[in-house]
Amino acid sequence: MIQNKKALIFAVALVAVLFLPDVASAVPQLNQAGLRFGRLGISAATNNDLLVTVKLRTTPTSVRKVKITFPSGFNITTAGLAVAATPSTIFPSTPAITGLPGTLSIAGTTNGSNLGGTITVTTTSTTLDSSTLYGFIIASGNITNPSSAGQYLLSVDSQDATPTTIDSTPVATYIYGASANQDQVTVTASVAPLFTFTLSGNNDIVPQADKNTVVTSPGVTLTIATNAPLGYTAYVKSANAALDSANTSGTIPTGTFNGSPDSVVAGTSSYTFVPSSGTVCVGGCNGSSVITYDGEYNGITGASGGSFNAAGSFASFVSRNGFTGTDNFSLKERVAVSAVQAAATDYTDTLTIVAAGNY
Image (cartoon, rainbow, N blue to C red; front, side, top):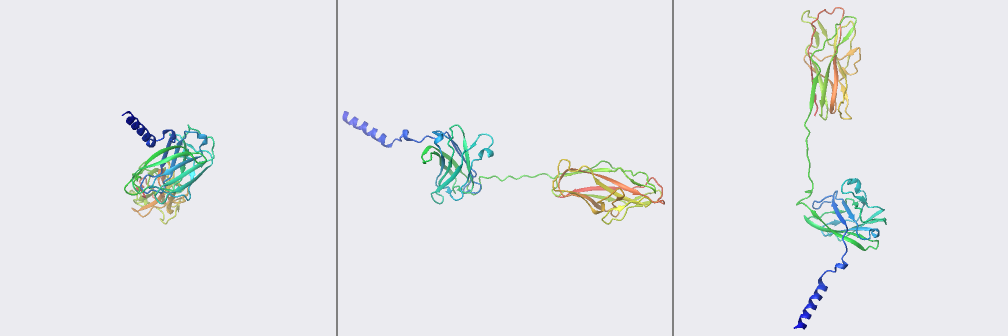
């Protein structure tokens, strides 16, 4: 009976020796390891770079290589592999990642199409430590994700120059989606159109004219703001195309509307429009946009002005070909009269000023 019990104990011990793992010979894990894929969608390859982070553990100064093992499902190509130790510029905040120091080189192996493989990065540094979180980026173009969604188990190993594995950590990732690009979100937005228009006043009194002078009104200020991508156009319409006196039936006519300014000469009756730019692009504007005056009002001097279109008809006088925070324009009238222009105090006209955004 006792002999049978001894035999049973021996048998159990033998099974334990044969089948239990050898804990003493197990490879330790790294202090930290992470794999951030640029894409997690099924079959994704474009922009699928790989950020590898490691915090070493055992004999860090002996580490010369970091090896990533990809399971079946991943497709690894070895031509054109590239590595950069610049994650600190991409992730400047938490966690603090230090680019793997030394001169880096990279090599890979493949187990066949979509059967996994390895990528190994080698450094010339001999001063690695166990407290720094190191990182490097394997450039996009050599890793294609599996075509089936699910969790996949990879490994990150530290190795010496031999190469012999020093520490090894399993790392899980999840490949997502029932079709391509389901790991991405398309964001759309819209911006409401904006257009504002103001005039500083609704009356503009031309100083008293005589045959010896050319007189100009103080003007009103036109202010336009718009986010219209193609800017805006401003228009003017004269009700009479002249200054008319009801009491005397006298008329001070506008000049010839022909695409260029008219001279305004003392002693010759003339009624013209004088727009000019004030402060513009207040609050910003499209840097390449410009303000353009229509030919009738372009290049006006102190002795000229632009004529009005036919009575009751609009004429564009200024435009900008891009958006603007605020543009301001001074709108004045310039008048001269002949010696026989009927004297009166009721010469009048009504100008209609409008503008429109160009979207």
